[in-house]
Image 1 (cartoon, rainbow over the protein chains, first blue to last red):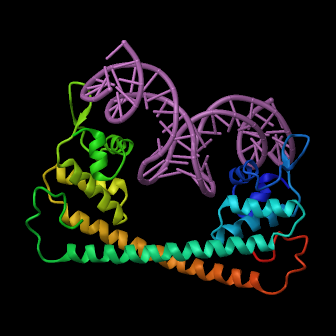
Image 2: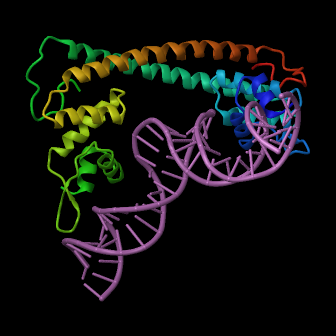
Image 3: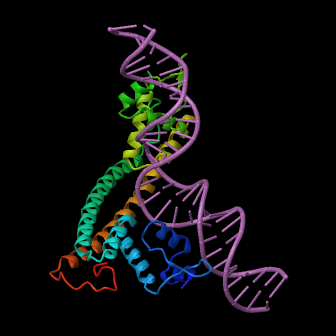
Length: 129
Length: 129
DNA sequence: CTTGACCTTCCACTGTACTGGAAGGTTCAT
DNA sequence: ATGAACCTTCCAGTACAGTGGAAGGTCAAG
């Protein structure tokens, strides 16, 4: 199948597929006499794997690592487990941080809603921040 | 004060201060005969305001808007309130999204921890994703 | 008079995941 | 034979908030 058909089947664009090849996520495809890329059926699965990895919050670099391990004939299970655990810890930290920030902003927002519409002093930029 | 002293006093770098000037967040400073920037004392407060804005999750562009309003002699209170409200809604959406993602990854991670260390099929890249 | 710390401008690069567009080649239907 | 739809490569740009470095000017101390 040509690149446009793969893009259609995998739910992405030809631009993105070429970008994935440049990034080492897709192996360089076989070429037709015309120079067109000619993909095997399993390419759809590979792109699907990339999408599932992204949905799990992995970066393309991390997904690339998993793919490389698989290409070397090894099973990436434990590596994947490590990545997922790492991602989980990052997420927890990120969520905590955002909750703290939400609290801060919520307080500032309430303060800014108080009925005191005059007298911003000239020296400071804004008494709410 | 020269740029290095302002950077020291405000807890940032000279690079960043010049970048702020280029971005319109700091007004072009007065120059000494040597060409060196010569800042007034209140510049420290202005940089502090930028930092507080960032701590509240505003972008430099949004902080720049507030500063511009102030420069035009107006009070930015209601604008700031609007920005904070907007930021609050964005944060809530972001937090919700991350919690969903956390749940997804948590499940994948548990699945990857199950005691079934053999039999990754050859067709798929990894049975955990 | 030179060394070192400081300053100036300008250009390019960082990371992430693409996206846009130009210039040209291929394939197929009409 | 010509037009549309597809493909190729390569270069550049997006958003964000800076950071790195080169080439050169300034200032005080030794």
